[in-house]
Image 1 (cartoon, helix red, strand yellow):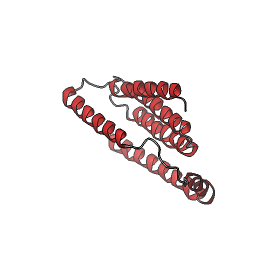
Image 2: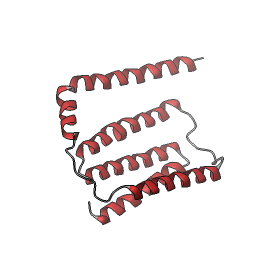
Image 3: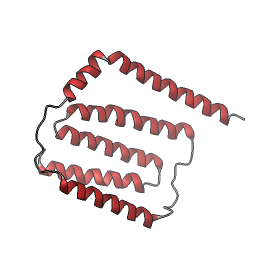
Image 4: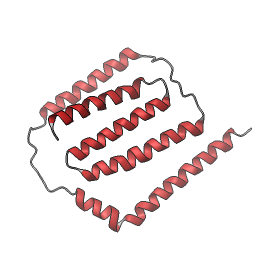
Length: 158
């Protein structure tokens, strides 16, 4: 990954993340979150890990974000956020977390020794030998989601 591509992606990622936390509409925050998740997948792909990029897109962007938007539509709840209640403690906490991450980043060695990655073997196992249990798990999660929606509808009924 070239330096220009990295820094362009980093700026876009930070802009989308900022849009997630500052958006007044929950729908706009969800769209900005999709940008964050897709850019994270692009970073994984740029670092030479196509399995992580694919899982990022399928699981988080495709699955979690779909559930977030679905929950917003079904709940018919408040879609406009109120004003921030305590911006100064939140900013101080964010600065502390950023400082801790930056100090950790400085302690990481510049060249990480290469070791055989189990990613390929894990992907082959997951999508060949354990494909049926993987798909059954997705059906189980879908059934749990439909059941939760049915229970929520029964509780709201007059």
